[in-house]
Image 1 (cartoon, rainbow, N blue to C red):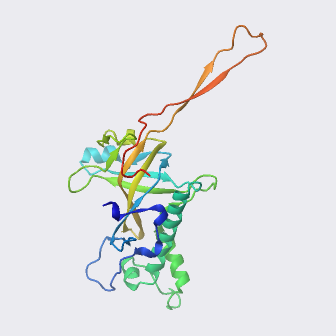
Image 2: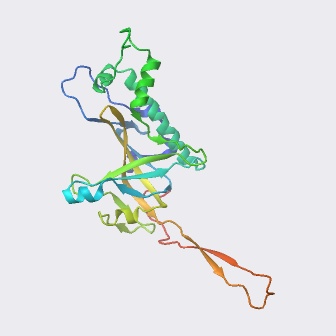
Image 3: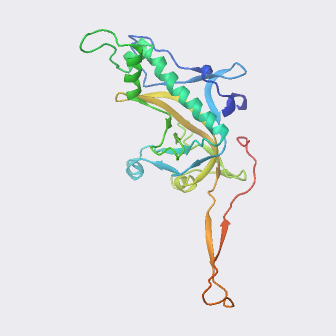
Length: 270
């Protein structure tokens, strides 16, 4: 398994394989997997080992209570910051942006893909074929990019990662604590464990291209993770000394980082 996992620093966009679609195919797939050629020549799913990342908002589930009441499968999402200061995360950001471009350009050159996505390829007024540049512009309007840039550039760009129960065994992804102990994820504790400010080292799968209602994009799936509780800084205010002059007040502030679960022993650590 470890030989199939690629570190951020080793990611190469040229090794990504976008599936081909045959025009006029009778069976129209709803999604198509993305493959990767690893450095040892193996072709398979693209699994990426990430360094520690921060999630500002933690995990969430759309319409959780309604889906629970209806007995539907819950699907969670979590947004991670791609810090441009961290070289490994910056490399991951650049790779994902290259992947965005590769998908759009591959589809622009594929009649099968264009037919599948129902993209108009001819000028409505003249009936002439669109130029490649115009076709790419049209596709970009329907594409949901992997990397989301914030309106204010002082904030880090982000990526969204999905996870849910495995259809084979009904369990959520495998996660461990900072000290390496197994964490049993349930619908009741997921949002508590994947809380605001959580740090995590993960293995993420660049899964497949999805297509819904005229839009398309790539799904990133969480395979496993090592969770580090957020450090909470608590200011402690000390009262001024009675021995000081009345017109002088001395307040001391002591930051106390509340660290839990120190230690390390997990395969995704670096």
